[in-house]
Length: 313
Image 1 (cartoon, rainbow, N blue to C red):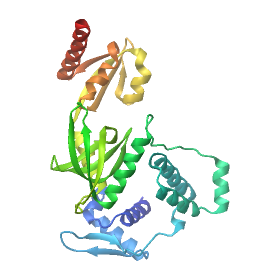
Image 2 (tube, rainbow, N blue to C red):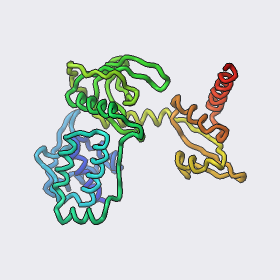
Image 3 (cartoon, helix red, strand yellow):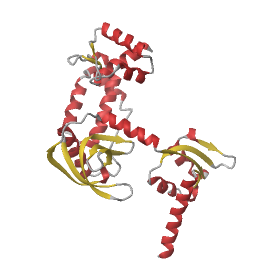
Image 4 (cartoon, rainbow, N blue to C red):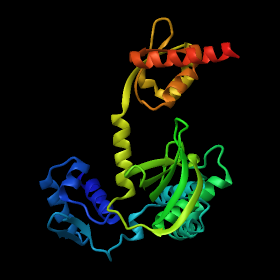
């Protein structure tokens, strides 16, 4: 266990500029004293760990140091190539082609034969099912704007259909489950926001260059995930047996209790976004919202609005 932790700390410090001892202790769920001993062990092994004091202090590995290729196994390189190919499917970036070639060059010819003989066990594809060339161009322009720190402007429509002009300072792109999102500082809101790429229209990349802000893409992603968890609500839903397959795929078997009459009782946490009501209505009469009451009332009210709409026709 200690050996795995030592290797993980080394890889983490290589991939980041600087981390405090407490950050490392929290990440690996050990004491601060254990982290200090681990860092001494890593340093004794010939990996130059440098410590810095002060408010911005912490630990990092000397800039010129790098891990030799022997530290990465053939299977791990194969996983890297698979992930890069999946990204390339969406980005169509020439730089990504060069990166794939560089990583591929780390694999010896004899190893390449082994890979070809074993076949491809995994395909990772981030392309949306209905993706268009325009969306790829949007991604390319936003990625470049984030790299060069150019301000961008666009017309954005939120999930409620409300559109606004936005001026933002892009930080980067993130694939979140089923779609691409832009993480950026929004000057209209005065804070960082996420923007789904399919809702961005009339994109313009300005000549204005914004100053670098002290925030990383992974920090914004962690903040987004924390906010999403805090916005979740506890739901109890009752589903008809005929939709069992769909329910298991969406919620997972561990959240489902099969009742004596065959109906499925689902207890789960879910984001309380506006599309939740539409999602539940999509199940028609195959679902009944038991808890919370306000959600059941909202679904019923929306269903009654639909009925009235058709009566008025």
